[in-house]
Length: 397
Image (cartoon, rainbow, N blue to C red; front, top):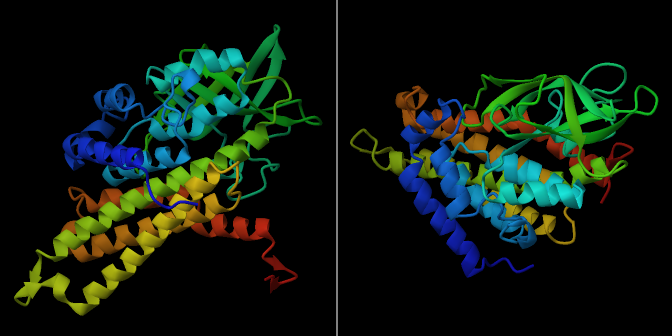
């Protein structure tokens, strides 16, 4: 593994950071999340048409840039620093790789170029709170995360020569505004039940989407209700849906870890800037040894999480490796973000607790991400179980 970044990778980071500094400050973030879309369409258009971010990790034959997971992780690290609300995670990190992995050639040719140019946004709808389980990060993929049986989750049935879906999924990232939904549903009834993915277009009859109030308003979420909705299977009949979701889990965890590292790094930077200015007893509080020690601990956590995230991104693109690395890197990054955000609020004093201050946005991102993709202890426990570290109650070395 060569740990050095290429000039092209450094340019991606620099260009995106410069853009976000100009167009995605705290005031712009608050204004964007309060729009109907939950993000700034103008900024998304810049992401897509000028920077090519939605197609960064897509092959060139489908209109993408042809980069790896590492470049996508670096881009999301910068967007995480600014808490930039956009459909990037939902579209480029969660949905597009599944279309690429499972879709027929006709589906890929029809959908991926439109995703790459930003004209088509997509979202992955998984019933309940099952996203990390579906991705193989916190539990058994063969469990009942998609409902299963006669009721619950989303059910698919054949009708009139096609497929129809019935059920609902909550906490769908950007599900209220996405023009294409990838819905995980159970087929085959009670005895022969299996999980498959289906494509549902925006505006389909019987599709109801409601934006939900969430702890972290910079990540728009929706409840998706499907009432006998016409759907198209993603890929051929019998496609390895669970295998594709597990592969997605490796890359998505690495990218989400990098995004959390970016947010943690920015929260730490803001806190360091503040303690250099705030004075008590005639001196800046940043000169107090206790404050230095606390910030040094945060710095070590952030740098450790960054190293883990970069390695996980490399491993995800190295012949499909890194089965357990992604979940561990995500756990490390979420913990670093939570610590950096909490220390930031504490060291900002009374102003850090106000709604108007930027610090609480990072704390809510930390808490919201743990609810969506964790929690941290389950990410680590599943990785330990998968590696069989503990057998018979003893540590296996």
